Image (cartoon, rainbow, N blue to C red; front, side, top):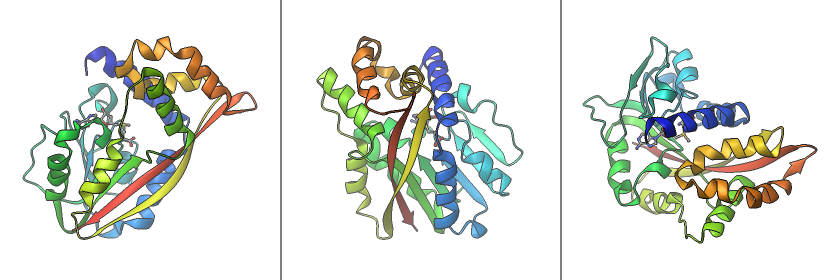
Length: 240
Ligand SMILES: C[S@@+](CC[C@H](N)C(=O)[O-])C[C@H]1O[C@@H](n2cnc3c(N)ncnc32)[C@H](O)[C@@H]1O
């Protein structure tokens, strides 16, 4: 991603974080489903601006964040956080971790590379530790719905990487999946479009071209003057 796109991504993703309960919900999910008491070292792959790394650091965990977008993670500042400005593909480590987290990053991998990149995550988990992968449910929720609608407008068949991930993970012995729900709420339609820009930046100029159609879609999700989109997440926990 070039610097300009990194900046667009950062601004729109920061607005997303202000408009959703997602980070609270997923942190609560981690606290409930992972024995954090035993966790000392965490690897956060595609950690963004530290929405998970920062609260984990406050819980006295040492967190390594691998994140290629410097605009997002460059200012991460905590003595317990080590920031590595790399893609997961280019990251190398001899160190292993009690907990490896990959939240909403698998979708950015090339589909052909997904198996080896998942294996690489599992390899860095210490025995007794676990890998946790967050993805968006490819069928449920109006957040996903507007993506599907946009791909239809473009006439492209977009197959979510969650399907591939699910089938690949079945090779692991101790894997389970859970579903969680969150909301994205904005004060108006144009603010929701600004947020969607972080997912659609690679589809410019079509994202701008289909603005009117996307606005019409969002009108169906008005609550008062604001817009509410529902997100359904699929979370995979792989124990080692
Ligand atoms: C939707 S954001 C999620 C950020 C964070 N995990 C969270 O839940 O708040 C996806 C992140 O993955 C990063 N990313 C994209 N491609 C990546 C890659 N190949 N390796 C590592 N991170 C990547 C992006 O820069 C972005 O910060």
